[in-house]
Length: 569
Image 1 (tube, rainbow, N blue to C red):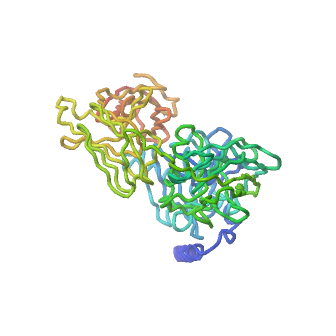
Image 2 (image 1 turned 60 degrees about the horizontal axis):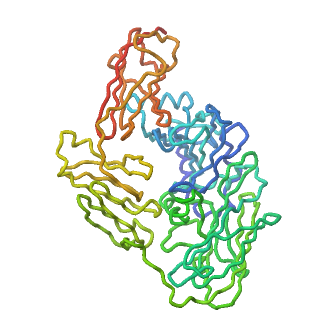
Image 3 (image 1 turned 180 degrees about the horizontal axis):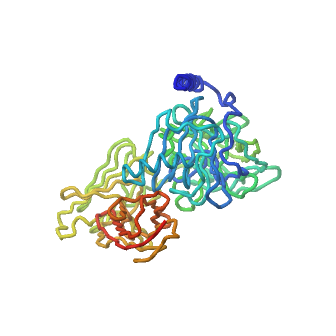
């Protein structure tokens, strides 16, 4: 058996190397089965534009319920199990002999033998959050075997299964390329079109500022944009989505191509990408427009320095060069979904004359921060550092300090790396000095904890979000309250033990529960503030039980809850 399995793995390694040279047309079309035994209706497609990342798989609806059977898409072995409060929640990874890995995330629980394997290690480590890497002989699975049950764990916004296929280099690939068939008969939507002057001498309709253009729907998936004039180096952008059959979710499209005077000019296809590049989505979209309007416009040109592998053949980075006054052009955008349904946008452009003495005013009270150098400034007790490569381009930022508040522009400019905020705590010598933290504040008065650490006299926070930050203090202990039991109660019929925990200012950092001095596993759902212990774990066996729960927040405030309960099996 072991020799046979080694041959199985060697074959897989060969196929990984062979697969790296395969085109998408050569990918296996009948190797992976559907992971659910219900009709596949999507709430999210591969490559869909999300906050700070491209969506790396398919989000499959589960009829607004949890507990649907999740099947192994192909035979293989469980190579990774990760359980976290946020992100993917409960996730399972299966490596297959053809070199690919499938991922199943936001699960409610695993199949019994996998659940037993995980629980044993959670109790051994006394931790709900855990990451495991079983070897190739521990948890083998057959194709279509039930491996888990769908859920809503982690950062999920509602019950569904997140399903991925990754190649041998751990790059997520579009599962539809492997024959995962999702019905789709509707054309993509076109919502907005925008034109961008790309330097100080370029103009659109006589102005050196980006402009939204009126879009007129025609018939048969065609759209017309009002004619406009432009001069210089111009970029275009489009806000587009797709709708699949069976749902009205606005999903991502598959391919966007542009044509300038009949010649191919730009191409972007959502086949695969690497996780290292996914944050560059913030450079690809009009980030300021998104922050102000919550709609994403994709730039139909390659921003300087972008490493995105989603781009195909491009001419002049997809930028338009419009310098001959009076010349006319036709610019077309073709948008397709995976099934080939398409929408076309047609634009008539006239070159306008260069505006002489065009004044482009620098923002008032702003500092030009170079993207290829590290910028550091000290304002009052604050020291701000924006490392080289944090900005995608040289950018004017408004940076001000007032007492214990530091304003670093506003959240309309993306950061690729963390900026560092240091605060000199020399003036804070009270007994609760370790309870201070750096909070991001909003115009409506909310304050959000930013992970902060105190070392000596320096309080430090790292963040990728521009905005206003203030020195705050949290001296309030977390709250703990029972949900499905009372102190001294008999709860023999309960299948679970539930408590609600919360910390308003800095959030829950850690928790621990024991019964009669013995550790019990409790699952934490931050979306509902619930801690849940399942009696089926079999660790609570006594009739009379002393429960102790300790919860600690992110600055070290701690609360202790004690209660007794009685139960008989």
